[in-house]
Amino acid sequence: MVLGHEACGVIEELGSAVDGYQIGDRVALIFLPRCGDCRACQAPHFEPCEHGTAANAAGSLLGGGRRLHRAGTDVHHQNGVSGFATHAVVHTSSLVVIPQDVPAPVGALLGCAVLTGGGAVFERRSHGHQRANCSGWSRWGRASCDVGGAGRRPRGNARSRYVDLQTGPCPPAYGATLVATPAEIAEHERQYDLVIECVGSTRALETAIKLTRPGGRTVTVGLPSPTTRMEISPLSLVVDTRSLIGSYMGSGDPTEDIQRYAQMYLDGRLPIDRLISAHIKLSQINEAMDALEAGDALRQVIDLAAEHV
Image (cartoon, rainbow, N blue to C red; front, side):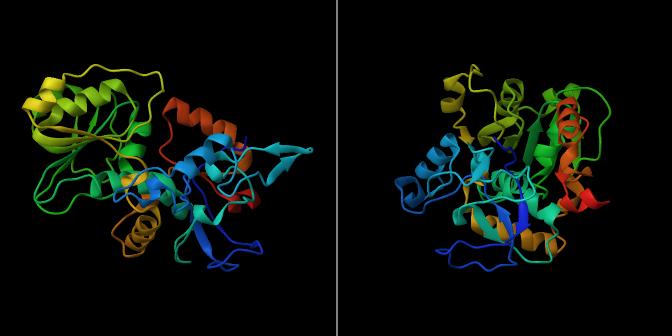
């Protein structure tokens, strides 16, 4: 399996049945294709496409089959993208055309990091004035990467606070105006209208729920292990009229959202490039994974231009 679910590139070849795209288009890739016809795609609110989900699980493209091969053997498509390679063959439902002025490293982050983080804020927040809280847990680098995917403070009378449950040096908090240490968390329980958990940690989600005020929303974005379990008091949800909400891919229209965030970057309103901590060669992928596991990296981008440096 060729891994890599975030990618940006330029179209070099088109299939005979492809319409609406041109050679030379700069495109960001979506890791969950949408057929547009199933019940989930027709739902009034975002739901993961049934056919796209099945194709991802099978390691095939949305249209069926595999277009990657090695030594006479089929190679699975990772979420329809397989971005850890010099070239990718994808279904058109995985493509979003973005402006040529958007650098490829920035475009790569649009398909997941920015799409997911931004949607958790824009699509899942309540209306009106509010205080927003992003709660993360893990090493600073890993957590701030996920929280920073939103890259933007909520509008209106809002404050954003980045919370990490580990001690240690704090790096610049991208998009956050305040940073809380574990010792300060208890002071802010039941204060925030919107709390976003971004890491996939049971402890982080439990903390996020504690920080949510009565009537508020707790949004979980992180992806824990499928076997992870947690305990919660249903009575607190009922009595405090709280909402616990899952958000996937930003829970909006991926095409519209990616194009919107790309324009926000060009307008200087969304400094996505600040999330990139390193540009690496494809040959350095193993070392990059080690750095990610150690929490020493924010966002590493495989830059094919670096291969020739």
